[in-house]
Image 1 (cartoon, rainbow, N blue to C red):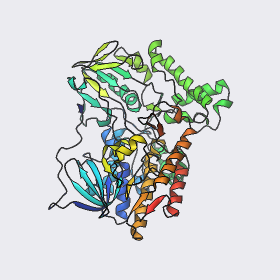
Image 2 (cartoon, one colour):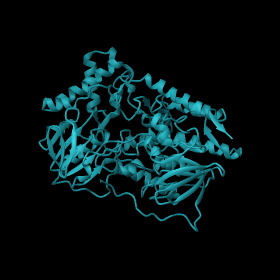
Image 3 (cartoon, rainbow, N blue to C red):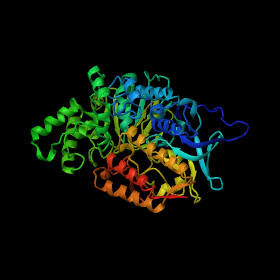
Image 4 (tube, rainbow, N blue to C red):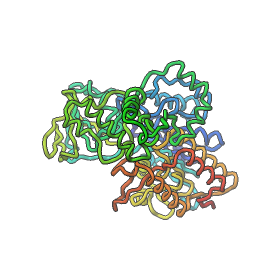
Length: 550
C-alpha cells in the first residue's frame, strides 16, 4: 500500500438538519486555481465554497512534499498577479522556490484574503450528477456529503491524479511504499535502508540528489531516459527583488506577451546559423549559469527546427558522457528517440547525472530488463534480483484528464465523462464539455496545461469563468454548455497546432493521451498565452459563441 497521511477518514459533515449545502458555485479543489476562483467569485457576490480532498490548501504543492520538490519557473513569475499589495508584501527567498515556500505562499494567500472559512477540507468529491428538473449539480463525496449548486468549477489541477502503477506481487512487499505525489508530511528515516526509486521524470530527478545521502543504497529503475538540465538557483538578493517589485506591472505585461507567460532569456540567434564554437560556448553558459528551462532559449530555433534541436540534444548527451564515469551507465542515461523538450525538460537544483558515479547508486534500465515481480523484500527482473527495504514511486501523473476522469461525472446524455474520454478527451477551450451544463474546468484537455505558467493561465481562465457566470446571472440565462461541434472543432485546432511542433514527435509524454485504438491525442493548446487569451475574449465578446445558452 502506498503511504500517505494527508486526508482525515471522517471529516465533519457540513450538512445540517439533513439539508444539503446549497451554493451558487461549488469549486472543487483548493489549489492555486481554486483559491483564486473563490476570491474572484465571492467578490462578485456569489455564494460559493471550495470542496477539497486534502487537509490543507495548495493542491499539487500540498501533496508533492518529497525532498527536492521545486518549481522550474522563477518565483516572482510563478505567483498571482491579481493583487499589487500581495506582490509587494510577499518575499521570495530563492530564485526558484522550493515546495515548502510555495505552499507557505498559498497558505498566506488563503489567510490574507480570508478564504479558509469558505473551504470544506477532507472531503473528496466522488460523483457529480446534474438534476435537469431543478438545474442543479448534485455533488457527492466518499463520506456521503451532498452539495447542490447551480454552477460547478472544477479546479482539480493539471498534475493532481497520480499515475497508478501496480507491480506484480506489490501487495506482498513487507517494506513501505512511498509516492512522490502523496509524500508524507513527517520526515522519513531511510538511513539504513536499501531503496528502490522507480522513475526518472521530473520528480524522480529532483528527488534523487536530495535522497542519496540519506539512504544505505539506492537502485534507480528507469524506463525512458529524460533530458535533465541543472537549474542555476540562488538566494534572492535585494537588488533583484527591488527590480521586480518596482516594475511588476511592466514585467507582468511582458510575461503575458510570451507564449508560456514566462519571461526567459531568449537568444535571437539560430543554432543553424552560428559557428560550432558559438554553439558550444552558449550551451556551456546555459548549462552552468542560466540553466533549467532557459536552456531551451539558448537559440531561437531549438523548439521549431528539428536539426537545431538535435544539436542541443547532442550537447546534453555529451555532458552525460562527460559526467558519468562508466560508459555503459552513461549510455543507459542518454535519451534518444524524441526531441529535446518534447517531454517536459527535467530540472534539478543539484547535480543529477554525476550521482551515478557513487558506489551506493545503481541504475537499472527497464528498456533492457523487465520487472517481473515484487517479493517480500526484493524487486525481481528477468535478469536479476534487487534486495530493497523501501520503494519510492516517482511515476508521474495523469495530466489534465486524470482528476476529472476519476470522478463519476454523469452528463445529461447518460454517459460518464470518464467513458467519453477513454476514446477522445476533449473540452471546448479546455473549459467546457457538451452535455455537462453549467460545469467549467480550469485547464481541462484542450487548455494550455503545463505549456504555460499555471498561475497566469489559471487566473485568466478563472476571470473568464467568473465573467461568464455573471453574464448568465444578469441575463437570467439558466444553462450554458459547450456545443458538441464547437468542442470537436476546437480539439481539431489543438491537434493541428501540435502537429506544427516538435512535441508531437515524442512516442509518449504527459502531453499526449493514447486511447485503446492507438490514436494519439495532444492534450495541450500550444498556440501560446496571447493567442489563447484572444480566443477567450472573442468567445465572450461574441456572446459565448460555441456555447448553447438556454
